[in-house]
Length: 114
Image (cartoon, rainbow, N blue to C red; front, side):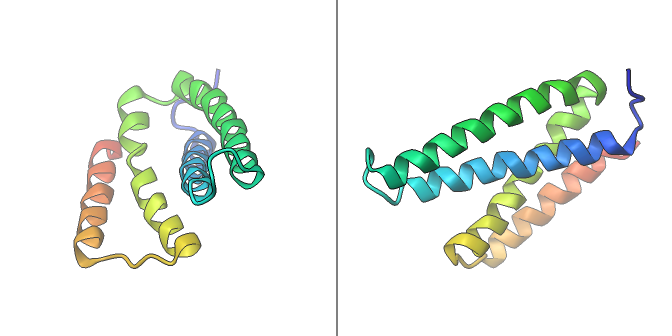
């Protein structure tokens, strides 16, 4: 069993959050095509596969990382979603969204800080 303070566990956990946020971006991308078109279907399929990878890794993370830290840290997917919105969909982040993101970061740090 891995130690709870192993930094690699946290790298794995945050990497897994990147995978999850990419699934959400893929779903949005697929939604831009007609529902049963090949363009939409392969994007949904890729998202489904990545979601399976996420689920397996998440279960392993939960074995070793305290539950309160793991679930509080999951809030960073909001920030990653904002990043993908800018990178992939050319969206603009408003001041209110930036302030909200700062609150999310502060919350995660407060919960994870011991």
